Length: 233
Image (cartoon, rainbow, N blue to C red; front, side):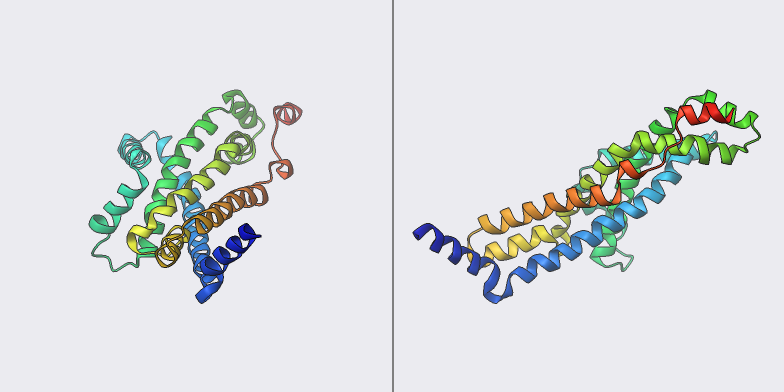
């Protein structure tokens, strides 16, 4: 009975009193905004980076490779500080916008490496076969290379969303109230971090699991297989 009473008391002071649960809900909105924005924009930019890395022009290929290599090696917190206090400090952007820019570039850099490796994994013979059938270079890439490359990269693509969401947990540095900062606020008022920490950890786990399963259902994706390619020859 004493244990139940203590749990009830902890639950009340951490979440119910002063509507403190709303801090976590507001933090959840910010975390979703940052994660989804950075991942969607990073995916689009990652494709462009991938194309640049595969370019025959060294003036385009080399700078992009150097930039993405730098972005993938910088720790998220240090990268965010560089963008907030050096690169974008005079732009007038809000802290949320700065965070989205920084994490978009980091996500795009990671994804571009994955895309390059996935495209390289497709057999050149299949592209040549498509070309002999009258496919244009773009059609061969879109209908033969891209579906197979996407199948190869999908597991890592899912993982990258989770990693991007984890990276955003450092935005409290800019006084952005994400879920991690919500825990700090609640803890500063209750001096009891356990319930808030456990609750937010569960939310992160559920977000990562649900979004990757719903947004990237591999069992429902139509792939261009090698057998299908043979039938087209």
